[in-house]
Length: 223
Length: 248
Image (cartoon, rainbow over all chains, first blue to last red; front, side, top):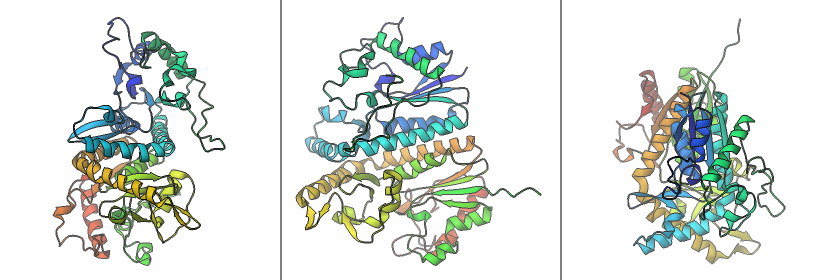
């Protein structure tokens, strides 16, 4: 049986298992896999950054067969993995934890806000370059793939209200901004329609306005 | 009579894969290990190695070439110190790599020259090569550095992160990089491309004096290049794809 490989963050899995726990309802990767009669291999993990998404994709690339399909959901580029006292931690979420080592958290806070956040545009561009190169390999071996990003849709909005503005409202959501069951179904239908049209990339990050900010004009196809 | 097809040998790595510290004429004459191997195995050398880069950049270069390689090409990936970290300096609009023990780690200084090629890839334009040193995060005005205090603070907090957070994850980073490199080797294999993976860093502390004659800074001397090429060829001919300990 051919496979549907899904790579991404919480937007590509069931982030709210304690709310979305109806055995008769499904999240979008399950709906898409079922509709296309594919076995679902969902590698999406909550809170991870593009560094981990691309690492997971790279580590699994050799397993992907030509007749499989691949959906890669990129996330906010200022997320990244760090090791703290032997444990993997996801930045910037780790800053909200109750870790007892206040000094370590202060170092991470300062580095994140003064260095990583300021590198946002470069990181975004670099992650897209990497994932598009991987997509070229998939295309070379005739595997259909799709790159999308929930993050791209809300770049112009503030963090506080991002989930409630613009195109993001096309999908029904829970209070934390993740898809409800209805939202998963709506998104799955759009994904299926995009796959049918053989669209491979749903964002544009190449245009900049006069002030040097990225312009997200070409986002309409999906969300 | 058909035209002879020459396949490529793609070499990705850091200064250990360049002729770092050697006379340029020796490099041009093909005396470094990558050229020796290419000649021996009858490949056209595509040398993508750059001094000062880290594994993040090395492995992203491997991803870059995945769509470009052709069946029967060969790829050699030389991993570096996993602690090396790419940092974007928005004042200078340059991506640079923090290297343990380097001038930056010691003094906040680094050679601008090293960034020119990397800036091209990341930023899309080639910086003018300059041999002077520049201070990270320091923006220069007509009368000297602008907001010197702020630049100093940025360097200090970067170094704190580097020394107290990143350095603690060395084993994790090394395993992660090797796993990713081996997975990419498998992806190359699926494209009909052979590959070879090695690392100068992993067993660096075991470096015996008799292996690979070295320069004062630890890089291969000319004889070291020759010796390393000979030993790599031996492994390649035995079908080894990952040489874990080059000092064995």
